[in-house]
Image (cartoon, rainbow, N blue to C red; front, side, top):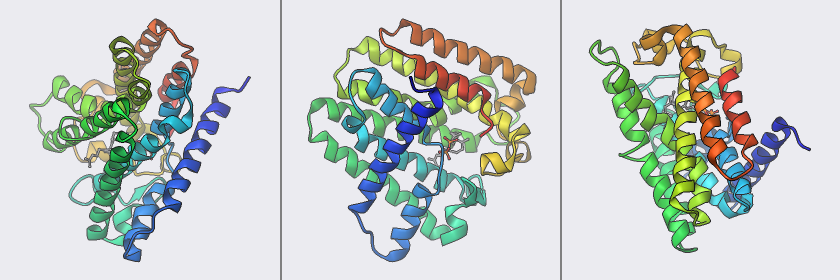
Length: 294
Ligand code: GRG
């Protein structure tokens, strides 16, 4: 029996192979776009979203290859969001995944374009997959909705808007997390269920897990911004405080954040217990996120 870590690494390796395969088929011009596009994709990252997507495919009786192009598309969208988030007009971060952020290496203009290219190529992949049939089309639509103006972008817009505003509170913070962080995780776990044409009840339980994991993920992210280490995180720390972000730490303090994170973790496990599948990997993932140092 494989341990959780071995299983995680197996899915991660399968994803890296799928990404390498995708990249081997495209060469972008000019060279600077080709380089900036690949740089942020290949510089590292936990690959949490594709790993969850592959694990969900297996849990539902399918295999990694069934959803590999969607996993590549989702990680490309995630990567574009990080490239744009690091720009001076947004979070202004010089490091990401332990390396200089895209704009530090290629300049602001090229980094904007690298992000745009990642997003558009991801959509092209979603369109290609949609040709496989209606269930793939449904899956592709979810990826686009969750990443777009009714999802991650809405969360990011609110995140920027509420910076430094004393009148913003818990419901605004929840809007940010639900959209900016959780919806991408909802995509990760629900896409295989859409592809396999599972019923609404299964999809909504998986989405509920993704939402709870998203809150857990963001709360631990906020806490790591206070007590995490640059060497482990690969990105700057202490920025939420200096930029007066509407973070959970700012709203509740560290102690209450830990209790809240534990509650979201327990909620993840509770939802998983209702699913008629072997869900241990997903429970372990919630516990990993609860205790993560990176
Ligand atoms: C620019 C539209 C737009 C959105 C940006 C991703 C994002 C939204 C902002 C980054 C800041 C942040 C705290 C986002 C919440 C989600 C999050 C913690 C992303 C980082 O994900 P990880 O830790 O990154 O999975 P790796 O590098 O491991 O892939």
